[in-house]
Image (tube, rainbow, N blue to C red; front, side):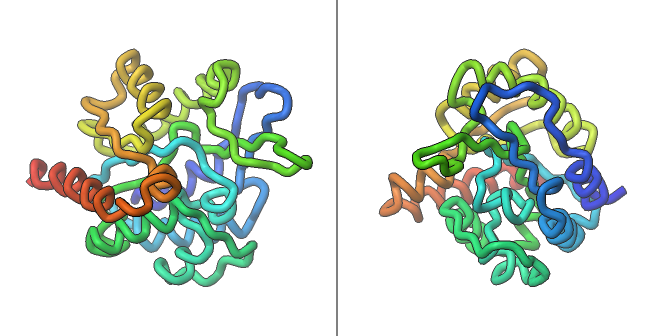
Length: 235
């Protein structure tokens, strides 16, 4: 099976098994939005229909305006259409800061085909989480926001990591997005379970776009230097 087949099957069967704290909801675009499953499958068939070696880049958990709508990590509706050429998306028009950074990075890395030929985005918790914000509006929630929430998702996190290992991604190195709690949590799990030989942490795209926008190019340069250094050692 090509990676596309494995990823599509993985998405189709993705579900949450735990019990969340009150006020927290799981967001599963593949169950809640048929179009998200269809367009994400089209995306993976376009870029992952082979068995070439790829490394994992692990985010936190999907947000409402990226993967929460398109089913593709760090890909909002604009970049899905304009950069990936997938126009069958029929959902809401969305704009995600992280997606802007990632696709600027991808362009400078060499384009979508080259980048996705080397890497696969997933998340420590592959399903989104939302909480009740002001005026009853849903807001994004991170799996590590409270100790209670981290404990509630840990079994699902471990099951997700095991599934990713079974899919055949490279395990010498994993890239973690988020130099704070996401890195700490993933490193703790890795020290205990030995999923990867090494975890390399990079600043999260959202952090760069929100707090370090003037230095955005410096962070893109760091990403490219780090990612390309890995592939030089593989040659």
